[in-house]
Length: 161
Image (cartoon, rainbow, N blue to C red):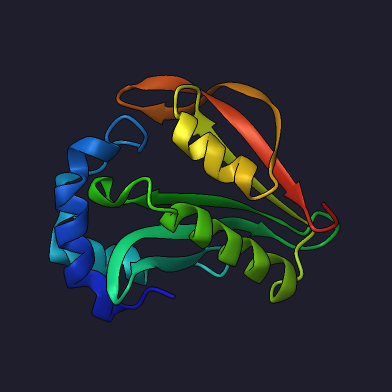
């Protein structure tokens, strides 16, 4: 899990990937890309979100989050992730998704994990499909990115899949 001790490393990684992630991420205030911004992001945790580092050896290569953790009859969460552009294509995202889905089902005892990708984000779609996720449809105008509402392909994985 990410901690405040990771903030400095995250700043460098986020700055290096700012342009790369811009087509996929919601707009962020410039302060997000500072040490104070990362410390605030890490401190803003909520019991319905769990944030992990994606590691490449001992180095942080990205982040993966289980968010919107819902209990009761739904027992679900949404997974979101990103990996440093220079490390794409090495299986880090696939391994991280596998580990976090295992954590969601075993440790958190969730029933369902959902994910969404931009329509053209084929690499991320492959990561999800390799991890047993099923496409369930397109959510029109689902996420505000770059000043416009973007369509997303939605995926799901159930604990008994």
